[in-house]
Image (cartoon, rainbow, N blue to C red; front, side):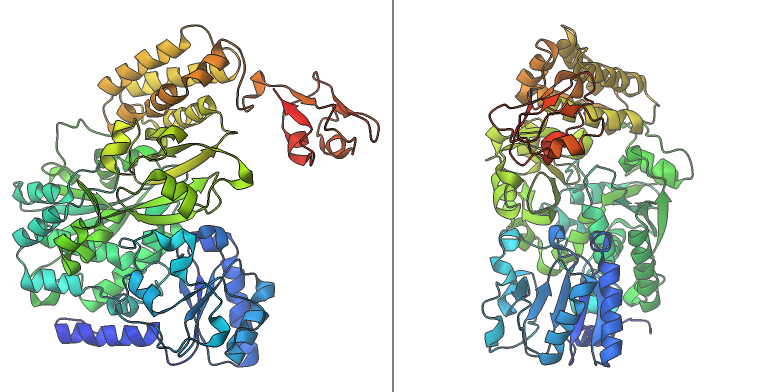
Length: 637
């Protein structure tokens, strides 16, 4: 790699990248992010490599990341000259020969791809150049385009614009997609104040959870006193079910790096750190490779683009403590100390890492910066809704058909995410609630499914945007048990530095365990509410002050379930074992004997073709009988 110092050098790299993205011969891409690998992508990749070698085919095989629809992985995409890009989902090593047969023939024959990408689809995904030029071959005309797949119809890709579109191991492919052109523009055509003004005008708010205006934070940090300043990236993603930042770090690490360099120039920082939890080995590896590549090209180091600006980035690995997602705890951890928060009256933009001015934004925020500098604040602010510009990335998980990573305009109705993008609830069950904002967020009930998904509307509803976790729940979910689960998580993750969080959350957890265990007492509900207020007012950091949110939001919208647990000693959802019993319906039981065979304690008895009986003294309430019964004959009450 030779150092890039001029626009001409950058254009040469872009040309090389375009030749890699759109090769003159067949190219096969395998989704090799964590979600793909967990589904068997490595086995598929190895099988493809072996088959290509066996047949001596002139085919390029490379890696890419997830496109977002994780429920259909492993995903294999085939690009051939003058043909649309074809995607084959739920691939296995056994199916590989069928794909290779089609590659060899150049015709889709029998084994159908899941979707295709035409020229207009690439334009919708922020592409500047098509991957092929028509006419469209007849054998693929009946294959749906990606823009007609429900999961993608309402998505707008900005932060995840390159995920699944390029080889994450290639810096040239990133440059071909416009990468580092924003950095060139910022360093050679803009002053630091102009960059900050552009970010402010865009309306970009921090995507890490708080939603503070990013440009205002940058401005404050620039004005802070100190010769040495830092820019930091928060990649410590600890929310259960959340993997937005991980996906960008794995699939498009250069977008984060470029955003940080632009931010550093605007603020006047000389050094940067990306804080990543050690549980993200692939993200760490891909980030390190990207940093080495950026350094080799001269995007990091001294005199970047002959501008006189010097800057470099290092990776700091965290031990996986949830509290280290909090800004001051993160900085304390980077300093090599125990990750404990500091009092908030000390602003990190003035006294942050090593008591020097430090600007911290999360992965998604930094990934948006190059796009804003390239296309302008007016473009970015035209997307979304009032005071909530741009898009937000969510990990859509739980009781929903289409599990995956989605990026949608701010202000989209919640029901559009659940029913249209997510494809609704599995098994014909009813949507009950969605947890947003992770453990510190809250539960939004079905009655608010029309709510605008933005920072302000979610906060008013008693929840929060958080980093973007979205856990969907159906009618079989017990909301008291959900609150108990999150409070249990937060008690374990509390650093224990302040009394309200250390003692208060622990006591709340004890009360919730009692309620779910059939030991709830009159006054427990009111005690939870009063304790919540004390914790919110007295906790040192955001972990403690938001910890009661799961309890407060479920009490607000599902108070009747708490009452049933405490007063009636019943769990309406049939989840809390101490409050339920399993029995067999006389009308529906066919006496097939399946439940009898599956029961781990052998507490079910009965003759064939006659109603079976459950011995309540031996039943451990595991639910295996209900899961195995095809006739819905097991009653839970």
